[in-house]
Image 1: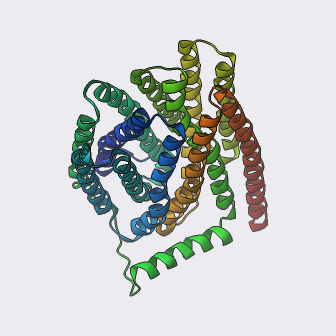
Image 2 (image 1 turned 120 degrees about the vertical axis):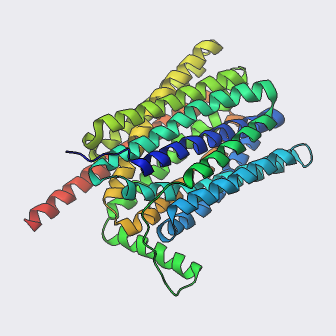
Image 3 (image 1 turned 30 degrees about the vertical axis):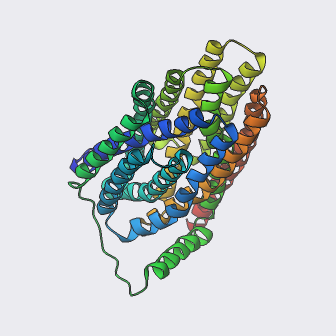
Length: 420
C-alpha cells in the first residue's frame, strides 16, 4: 500500500508555495507589461527581460549549495521576508526614481531570489515525499506553480487595468509576507554538515562533487541538461517575449486579453501537472521526446494564423488554444525530467544537481529573449515566420532527445545484463 503524501509538513509547503508563487506570478505578469506599455520598444523589452534572468543564472548554483548545506525551511522563510521588503521598496521608488532602471533592478532581484529559492523547494521533495510518491509530489508542486500562474495573470490584469501598478506591488508584498509566516511552521528533516572550509571553498567543492558525479556516474543527465537548454532557447524565451508583443502590438488587443491568454497557458501547465500525477510511473524519460515534439507542432498553427492575416479575435483564439496544449506538454516534460534526476541522484547532491540543471538550462533563455526581441522588432508584420522557425528548431531538439533517451535505455539494459 502506498504511503500518504499529504502529511502536515508537505501540506504546509504546498500552501506556502501557493501564496508565494501567486505574488510572484502577478509580478512576472505586470512588471514586464508595464515596461512594454511605457516604452513601446520590443527590443528594449526583450533586452530587459533577458537582463532580469542573469541574476537567476548566477544565484541558482549558490542556491543549490546552500540548499544542501543549510536548513531548507529557513532558506524559504528568509527569502520570502526579503522579497516582501524588496517589493514594498519598489512600490515606494516608482515616481521618485527613473522608471526603467527601477523596473529592471526589481525584476533582476526578483528572478535572482527565485533562482536561490527553487533549489531549496526541489531538494525538499525527497525528504518530504515517500520514495514511491516522488513523481506525485513533484506533480503537486508543478500544479501549485501552474495554479498560481493561472490566477496571477487574471488578478494582475484586473488590478493593473483598474488601479495601476502600485496596488499590484502592495498586494504581492502581502503575499510574500503571508508565505513567510506560513513557512515558519514547516519541519523539514535536516542533517547539519560541518566543515572547516570557507563558504566559497565549500561551494567550489560541492559543485565539483556534483560535476564529478554527473560525468562519471550519470553522464546521460548532462545530455538531458543540454536538451532542456535548447528547449529554453527556442520555446521558453519565445513565449516570454512574443506573447505580450503579439497580443498587445500585433493584434492590438487590451491588457485583459493578454491576461486571458496567460491564464489559459497557465491552465495548460496545470492540466499537464494533473496528467503527470495521474500517469505517475508510466511517465518515462524514454517517451519524453514526444512531449517536446508536440511543443514544436503547437507553434505551427500560431505562425500560420499570423501569416494568413486572420482577424484579431480568431488569431488570439489560435494563439491561446495552441499555447494551452504547448504548456501542458511542457509540464509533462518538466515533471518527468525532475523526477528522473531526483531518483538517480543521492540525497546529499539533489540540490546541487537540480541547481546545475536550472543554471545551465537558464543560461540559454536570456540569449533567446534578447534575440527574439530583436527579431520581432525587425520582422514586424512577419512575426509568423519567427514562430515557424522556432517550430523547426523544436522538432530538431525532439529528434535529438529521442536518440539520447533510447541510447540511455540501451546502456541501462546492458549494465543490468552484465550484472546478472
